[in-house]
Amino acid sequence: MTTVDLSNIRLPAALRRRVKYIRSVDQIPNIPPEEREKLRKVTEKYVLRANDYYLKLIDWNDPNDPIRQLIIPRVEELSDWGILDASNEASVTVAPGVQHKYQHTVLLLCNEVCGAYCRYCFRKRLFMDENDEVTNDVSEGLRHIASDPEVTNVLLTGGDPLLMSTRRLRDIIEELRGIPHVRIIRIGSKMPAFDPFRILGDPELLKLFRTHSTPRKRIYLMAHFDHPRELTDEAVAAIDALIRSGVICVNQCPLIKGINDDPAVLAELYRELSFIGCPPYYLFQCRPTAGNEPYAVPLVRGWEIFREAMRQGSGLARRPRYVMSHELGKVEIVGIEDGHLLLRFHRSKDPEFRGVLMAYKLNDKAYWLDELEPVEGTEARKYPPSPWLGVHDSPC
Ligand code: SF4
Image 1 (cartoon, rainbow, N blue to C red):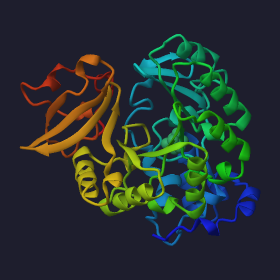
Image 2: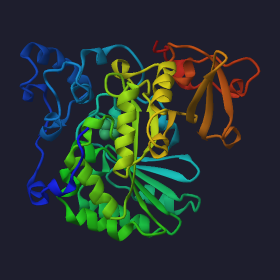
Image 3: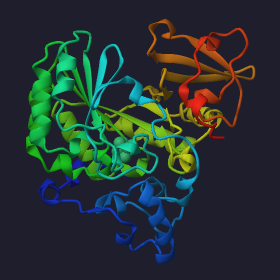
Image 4: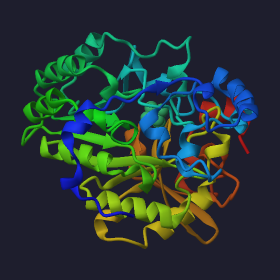
């Protein structure tokens, strides 16, 4: 990993940089024409979006290049596996674009576009033509938040909120700052990885954050770096600019086959993130979302990778929790003992189950909670099976 010297970042040049977006495999000459032909069919189902900055990070001589895996479609995505809304987000949607699952946190899905599209995205349904989950008008969401004094956290998500205009972002943030009980505004964004110039080139955006990230009411950036190679000088400069504008930065990313399913890669990512002031927060189990089969890692293997990565680095590089964002809550994978996979409800929709530890029979082919069989006499038996299991075939 190269040492980042911020004095080498010439911001005036960065300010002039505008990424060029592409939406077709035919705009990527590095992919041979016969392969493009096959991939076109994939993108008819799961759209492609990339940009010239991010594409330049790919080593085209390496067919297994992790950045390539992240952004370039694969024919295996067309396998019959998973469902579009694997965490049943529809069940916690209280108004268009408004999700309220946990007492203190509301999600506003305020944009349906990203700086590029991760092939493994769990919300790829938002990018489909017929989907209307995201609304441009967040007034109903704001009314919902204002009416519930328990809501202290609001997560702006999508899609990527930093792809909205600064003017629109300002309108939403100012409205939220007008609601006294909202203390934390989180912005879920992969723009520092996909297009750091969005942040570096917009002084108005940084001024907005400086104004509204205050000592008692912070703005958090929930960054999404998946691989150490995404931490370019420009990306690190973008995180630095955010920190200097009063934003608290943390990282959350999924465990993805071919990208970061290697303990050494994951440990390096976490180490570097801790150095730049963006420590790891969650490692997500890849959801059984349609199109995600080539990217998913089974739970047992995932635990082994995570455990090995957690043996490296300082305490700040070892802070993440490895969780499944299940429709019942955030289920943490905490260990393997006596042939059992141990899970714990880190967050639970149902208050009765918060913090409860559960034991399941070891199944090294399982990708998701619904495929696990509870051990007789444990708390796990209390949980109702998710509709995901009843309605659809198991993905393995
Ligand atoms: S940045 Fe997030 S929402 Fe956007 S494509 Fe990637 S995973 Fe999906």
